[in-house]
Image 1 (cartoon, rainbow, N blue to C red):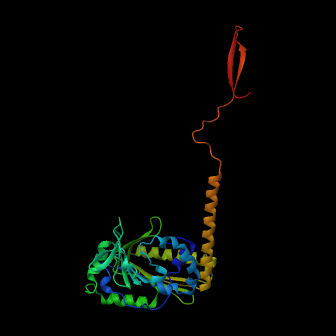
Image 2: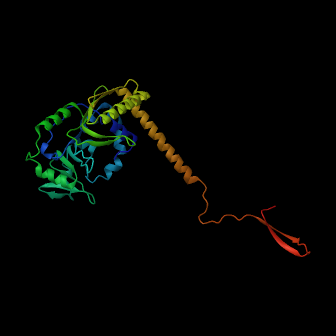
Length: 335
C-alpha cells in the first residue's frame, strides 16, 4: 500500500491518460454477477509526463512494500499494463475480482504455487484470496473460489455479454481510468453523518489527461430525495474546488435533471503540479510536527516508577498544658 505524499499524488493522477488499450478483455473471466467495473491502464498513466515527474519518488516509497511482495521479481511499475476491477456492487457482502494484463512469466514460476487445472495459483495463507497467472500476459486476483471459477470458465465463453463487451471496449479506448456500474439494486453510498444515497442504480465516469485533466461522468438515482442530495453535494464540491488557490482556472460544472447528475471538470497541467506540490508540502509539515511531538515526549522528565511522594515537612514543639505538664506537639508544615 502506497502511503507517501507522492503515492497520494499518483493516486490522484490515476484519473489520467487517454490511449487505446491493447488486447480486448476476456469476457469469460468476468464473474457472472459483475455489475461494477473500474479500469486503470497503468502503462498509459505511467507514461504521462506529469506522472513521470513523480515516478522516482513513488518507486522509492514503494520499495519496502515491494520487498515483502510474495510474487518474487514482480514489479508493478514495470510489469503491469492494465487492471480491470469487477464487483457485484452489493451493499451486503460485496465482492472484488481483478483481471491483470502485463508480463507475468516470473509469477508463473513461483515454486510454492498450487497447480489447479494446469494453472499455478498462489494462495494467501490465512486468508481467502489467491492470485493465478493464466499465461505470460494475464493474471487474476480475488477470493480463491472466484479465482478457480474463472479458470474453469476460461475459453468456454459461458459468460459472454455482447453489449457489455462493447461498452468495456468503448471506455477502454477513450479513457485510461474509468468506472461504470449498471443494473444496480440500489447501492448505499455514505457521504458523512446520516446523509447517504440508497437508490443509486447506475453511474459512469471517465478521465483523460492530454493538456491537463478532463473528467466526465454521470450518476442516476431512483428517488427524488436522493436527487436532491446529489444537487446539494455537487454545489458543495463545486464551491470547494473553486476555493482552492492551486486550482485557479479549474472548471467544474454540474447539472441535475430527471434524477441524473452529470459532471464535467477540467484542470490545467500547471494547476495539477501546484496542487501536488502543496499536498506534498502539507504532508511533510505534518510528518515533521509529529516527529517533533514524539521527540518532545521522549525528552520530557519522568518520575521514577513506584517512587513515593515526598512527605510534607513537620515541626515538633514542647509546650505545657494547663496543669503545667510538658507535652510534645507535632505541627504540620515548616512554620
